Image (tube, rainbow, N blue to C red; front, top):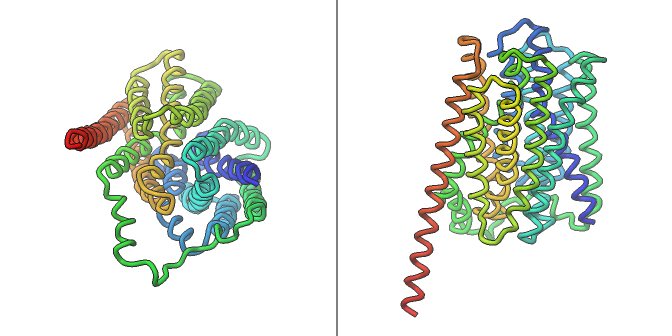
Length: 410
C-alpha cells in the first residue's frame, strides 16, 4: 500500500511545511495588534521556521529511540497545542513561544519522521528521489494555499481564531499517521531501534564519521547560510512590498509568486535528478546561487515587474534547495543516518534562521529599508554555494585521477 503511504505523507508535509512558510500573511496583523517593532514581530516566523528545521537532530534521536509512529503522533499533538494556546496571547513574546517554538517543534517531528518513512518505504534510488521531491512538492502546495487560507480565516475570525482553526489541520496529521501505519505490514518500521550488544564501537563510529566528509561539511555550511536567508524571505515579502510603496494586495501577490515557483522547483529538481551523472550537490549549489543572485538584485529593484521576476527566481532557488536537502543527505550519508544528517542541517539552519530573522528586522527598524539585508545575505548565499561547488569539483577531480591511474596500471 505504498500509494496510501505517499498520500498520507503528502498531507502531513503539506501542513508541517506549508504553515510555517505562510505565517508572513499574518505579519502585519500581529504587528498592529501588539504595536510591536518589526524586530520583535519577525521573531514569530523566524522561530517557527527555525525550530521546524532547528530541532531536527533531536527529532532524529527520538525516532531512533521511540519509533516514527510515536514521533509523528507527538508532532501533531505538539503543533496543535502550540496554535491552540496562541488564542490567549497578550504579547508578541507569547506568540514567539507558542507559534514559534512549540509549533516549530511539532513541525520538526512530523517533517523528519515522514522523510525517513518515505525513504525506507521507497528504497530504490530513482523512486526515492522522485518520491522525496513529490512530498516536498506537497509542502510547496501548502506554502501557496496557506497564505490565502490564513488571509480568508483572518478576515472572518481574526488571527486568534485563525490559529485556533489551523490547529485542527495538525490534529488531522494524527489521523493520517494512523492510516499510514495501519497500511504497512511491517510494524518493525515504526519501532525504535535501541542499541544492542551486536553493534561494535567501530561500526558505530564509522557511521558517524560519514558526517565528517568534506563534501557533507561544506554542504551543511552552504545549507545553513542559504536557508538562514531564504527562510526569512517569505515572512517579509508583504512588508517588503509595503516598504517599496505597493499595496498589501501586491504583497500577497509576491508571496504567491514566491511560493508558486518554490513549489514548481521542488518537483523539477527531483526530475532533474534523473539525468545520469547529475549529482544532487550540483542541483543544490546552483539553486543556492540562484537564490543569492535574486536577493541581491531584489534589494535594488523598485519596479513591480522586476520584483515579481526576482521574487519568482528566489522562490525557485529555495524550492530546489528544499528537495535536495533530503536527497543529498541520503546520498552522501545513508538511510540509517538520514534523520541525523537532516537533523544536523536543520539544527544549524534553525539557529541561523532565527539570527538572520532578528538581524533583518533590526536593520529595517534602523534604516527603514530591506535593501542592505538583501544585499548582504544574498552575497552570503552566493559565496556559500561557490564554496560547496569548489569542494565537490576538487573531490571529483581527485577521484577521476585515481581512476585513470588504476586504469594505466591495468
